[in-house]
Image 1 (cartoon, rainbow, N blue to C red):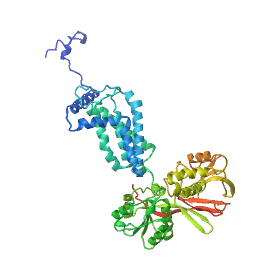
Image 2 (cartoon, one colour; image 1 turned 30 degrees about the vertical axis):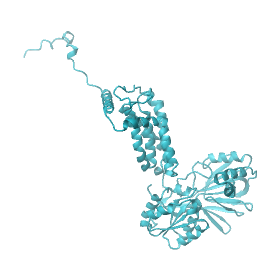
Image 3 (cartoon, rainbow, N blue to C red; image 1 turned 45 degrees about the horizontal axis):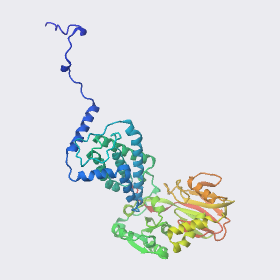
Image 4 (cartoon, one colour; image 1 turned 90 degrees about the vertical axis):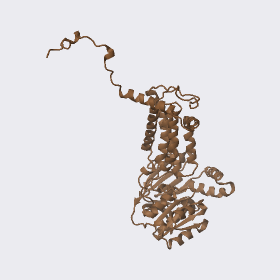
Length: 507
């Protein structure tokens, strides 16, 4: 074979092939994605969607600056459901983080021109076209963040919000404001913001069980053996009907006022489990009866304040009914105070000083001026008092504006409010506000402080028992919202895991 005279020459002497015959290099992945993005955008612009030309532009404008999601959050909040309120707050927090991330990093990092509007029908176009970077879509990020945040608290509410969020995201392509890739990137960032918020503030299902699982409570299919006492005076007109529908074999007793304890005692005489629907005061009364008779307790929130039920994780009848039928329960601590021969219990809080006086004044004025105004009048009257409580605490006489003891440790959310993540830690969360000038400032400082903190104004410790003496006659004490007179001396301790309470082990 003869050698090729051309290829045998040195490279610098070979004739050059014209560029028109040179093969084109393959397109990069980024270029192919951009081309696909434009192709999909043009396809959406060419497609006619019945009714969408009028609806989607308005929907897109309504989501400007998060106004649409603020309105949805307000609607969730006014339902009165604790879960809906949490979903609204988490959704807005996720939206805020997503919006801040998009506006400070996203649009400044990637500069991309907005799509051309030649192929977008005029009826779809926004009246005021955005001029910022097209990548990523802030509207899609806000929509995804809000919907994901809501879904983390409630799957049902998340499923209801998701179609609206998807419609907002699609509207940004439909109106020509964004390419599809911008919307997908924004949605991914929004969902990521919701997960970041959950990492900082865990959802309820991420928190540990507030008690310890038990196996020695009876499972009550269809509620057979459960006697549920509903306190109608606590504002629960519909709960009795719902309970009868969900647990048709349960005995549901409705009562009001002073007859509550008598009905609870009567129910405990033949029940396999005792149930109570009402506020914290009603739950306290039922817990005392359940302890006396050795019965498990089923709690359904139905009052103005429902701290114990909410800390336990029970918020609606379906959750409670699921636990009752399955026989799921936890053991919780019960606080106990004793004065001479008298014994009382508290599931939430015990206090001496300003707070009991405030509750007593509020009850005195509520019948005259109404509940909300009574709070203001009571606070004003208590504030004018210039003498702190004198008591001997663990052998040392102290002037105190407030002595608070919580059943288990409260998180840093005030003196008599807040949440607990463990209802069986065996401890009393004791917080004392020392006497002296400026009681308002002292109370506020203690409210902002957490457990195990000390200052010249207050102290916070966790103990298993507490002795209080030297109490003046007529000094009021409060326990779970109820007020009575204290004896000259008091002893506080715990019944560790003393009460069995129905609760679904998975919420």
